[in-house]
Image 1 (tube, rainbow, N blue to C red):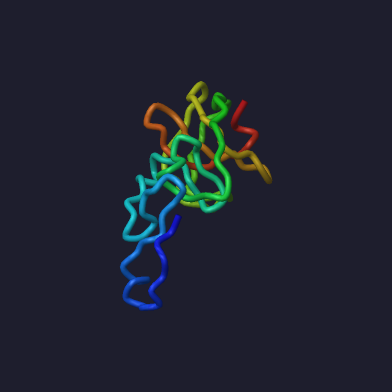
Image 2 (image 1 turned 45 degrees about the horizontal axis):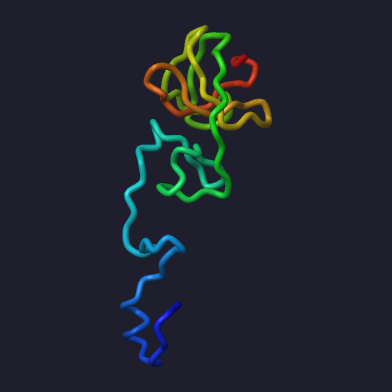
Amino acid sequence: MHPPRTGRSSDRRRRSPTSADGFALAGPSSLPDPRFHAYRKDLADIALAGQVIASHYAEPALRAVKSAGPLLADPGTGAEAVGEVTPGDSFEMLDDSLGWAWGYAGKERRVGYLPSAAVS
């Protein structure tokens, strides 16, 4: 239940909106390091629920890397390499669409994209 409104704009500015759980939704946020925590505007690792806002959350599906190559910052062959993968490395996949798999790779759990064909 909300307190009655007084009509004074200063009252509205002092109150912060809250969620159903009662935590404040105002002020700066401290996002986890995107190099090691998988989140985008449309999708995030379910482990990050409550820390980041995304349209959807998913639980990573454990896969294995089939072929060596770069782990990329973005989908596409011209994207910046953020790491390297080798056959047998673990890949925790959150998304596989348009020929690109997105998730965590290797022991460091670095976030990036691989061609879908490189993941079993």
